[in-house]
Length: 232
Image 1 (cartoon, rainbow, N blue to C red):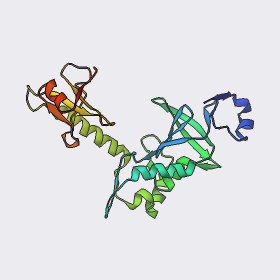
Image 2: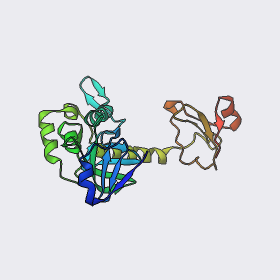
Image 3: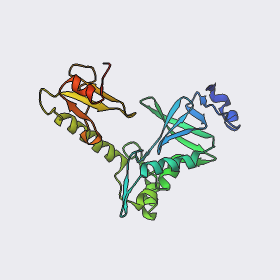
Image 4: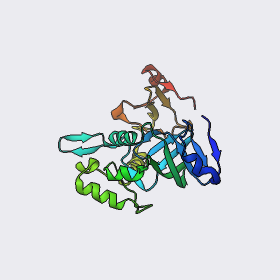
């Protein structure tokens, strides 16, 4: 997909025109184009990854709680951002870079996307970095919109809890015995792979027995159960 570079001097003229399907990148840090939404606060514009500045949406796999049970609020937040951006040309003013992502304030048809996501209750103000959307959050909370109709964990706290749980599991996980230390792992695609001590990915592989993963006492045992040896 082509990306065109334009100078600050002609940016005002070009931005008034309809942007092509590809993205335009201005020298002063403005991205213009149509986007593909990846979660409630992240998008792709051509080859560029964009993180919406000053807001924090629930994570894609995060759930919230109603009295009737869990709700896939992370998916709902993504759909909300899709509705705001679908088919529209966005203008995104880049404020910062974070791990290769453009942290930006984006508008479409004169409406600021960041503010709308918080005002409609699909994201919260990310006050670790900005106070810009505190008022929008307060109104959405008072009106009981979207996330505020449920019990939910703020995304920052949710991520911190997952990291702590993963670290705890990594420290605590030990093989059932020194003779049965081969890790039988199942990939996302369902492929069964076993890792022997000394292989490159052995130490970072975690066994989830509830998900069907298991320990083996020998490569022969693993193969007989349908696992294959990891390549490295």
